[in-house]
Image 1 (cartoon, rainbow, N blue to C red):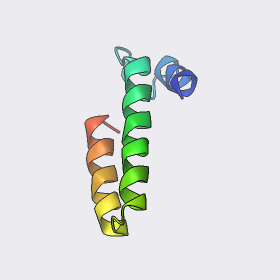
Image 2 (spheres, helix red, strand yellow):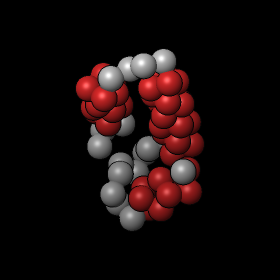
Image 3 (tube, rainbow, N blue to C red):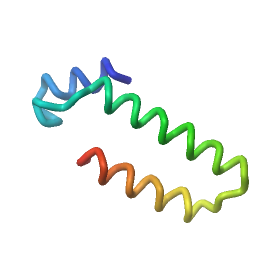
Length: 60
Protein backbone atom coordinates (compact mmCIF):
# COMPACT_ATOMS: atom_id res chain seq x y z
CA UNK A 1 0.00 0.00 0.00
CA UNK A 2 2.84 2.38 0.79
CA UNK A 3 4.23 1.93 -2.73
CA UNK A 4 0.92 2.99 -4.27
CA UNK A 5 0.77 6.01 -1.99
CA UNK A 6 4.34 6.96 -2.94
CA UNK A 7 3.36 6.82 -6.62
CA UNK A 8 0.28 8.94 -5.91
CA UNK A 9 2.40 11.46 -3.99
CA UNK A 10 4.99 11.61 -6.75
CA UNK A 11 2.24 12.05 -9.36
CA UNK A 12 0.72 14.95 -7.41
CA UNK A 13 -2.49 13.15 -6.44
CA UNK A 14 -1.79 13.57 -2.72
CA UNK A 15 0.15 16.35 -0.98
CA UNK A 16 3.94 16.22 -1.40
CA UNK A 17 4.57 16.24 2.36
CA UNK A 18 2.43 13.12 2.95
CA UNK A 19 4.06 10.53 5.20
CA UNK A 20 3.13 7.60 2.98
CA UNK A 21 4.33 4.91 5.39
CA UNK A 22 2.29 6.36 8.26
CA UNK A 23 -0.74 6.73 5.99
CA UNK A 24 -0.41 3.11 4.86
CA UNK A 25 -0.24 2.03 8.51
CA UNK A 26 -3.29 4.12 9.37
CA UNK A 27 -5.32 2.68 6.49
CA UNK A 28 -4.25 -0.87 7.36
CA UNK A 29 -5.12 -0.42 11.03
CA UNK A 30 -8.48 1.09 10.12
CA UNK A 31 -9.28 -1.82 7.81
CA UNK A 32 -8.28 -4.33 10.48
CA UNK A 33 -10.46 -2.57 13.03
CA UNK A 34 -13.39 -2.42 10.64
CA UNK A 35 -12.96 -6.11 9.87
CA UNK A 36 -13.07 -6.95 13.57
CA UNK A 37 -16.14 -4.79 14.07
CA UNK A 38 -17.86 -6.51 11.15
CA UNK A 39 -17.09 -9.91 12.69
CA UNK A 40 -18.55 -8.63 15.96
CA UNK A 41 -21.79 -7.66 14.22
CA UNK A 42 -21.39 -4.00 13.25
CA UNK A 43 -23.98 -2.89 10.73
CA UNK A 44 -23.19 -1.75 7.22
CA UNK A 45 -24.22 1.75 8.25
CA UNK A 46 -21.80 1.71 11.20
CA UNK A 47 -18.95 0.60 8.94
CA UNK A 48 -19.79 3.25 6.35
CA UNK A 49 -19.66 5.94 9.05
CA UNK A 50 -16.22 4.70 10.12
CA UNK A 51 -15.07 4.70 6.48
CA UNK A 52 -16.34 8.27 6.07
CA UNK A 53 -14.25 9.47 9.03
CA UNK A 54 -11.19 7.53 7.86
CA UNK A 55 -11.43 9.10 4.41
CA UNK A 56 -11.79 12.53 6.01
CA UNK A 57 -8.78 11.88 8.24
CA UNK A 58 -6.50 11.13 5.31
CA UNK A 59 -7.78 14.13 3.37
CA UNK A 60 -9.15 12.19 0.44
